[in-house]
Length: 273
Image (cartoon, rainbow, N blue to C red; front, side, top):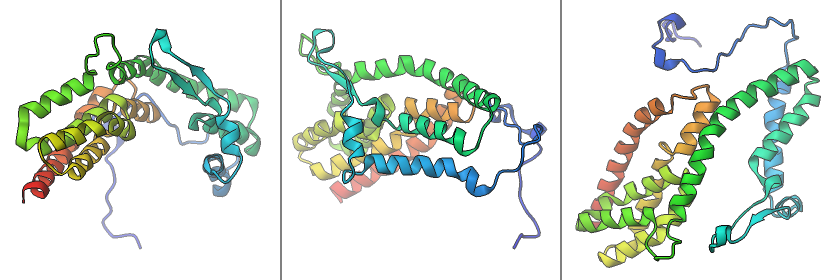
């Protein structure tokens, strides 16, 4: 049942400039194409989800087949740092495969395929150009602890300074350190890997329950995903907001700070009350 008074956006001409991105989607059908059934339109997404699930199930042999093909770089630049990747196991490869299969499923014409891949390539190049510099910066941060002078890594040094400066009110800042890790690395998991042991050590040193401090780290890292550089760039590319990542960060930093403050206060309550 539709209510008598409905709400909708104002006319597009009255929208603020910050609402507009570089992606202009035309919903009118000027090419004379036949309308596609809803089930057929959803089929590529269902196919992609199915391929992802099948490729991840340990009960099936596909996972081992895909992960056995690796590209490795051991002892990078003579250091103890090594890196490897399984290109066929990456979600992006599954997405690309689903896209190629969709050409046959939707019986697309060569001109339509060329247009689709061309438009997608433009968006990917815009986001990829930023990530080319972002990803190396993240790896330098994470592996900065590997150095001849045995100095602590940059994230650890920053976190140690915060812990030493705040003392007994450290639980208030523990979520922020988790968020910092997620902001730098673009991942909750990587943030926990970077700072989990450190948070445990600080909790032990300050005679606080390590379980609560590590939990604050995990919750803060989840909040940090809102301002993670990787996520902001990827989301901006998806909706055509390339070049406006600064505006997105200015808007997402507000709920992130609110989230971290509330979680930090709850941490203090759990520990002292």
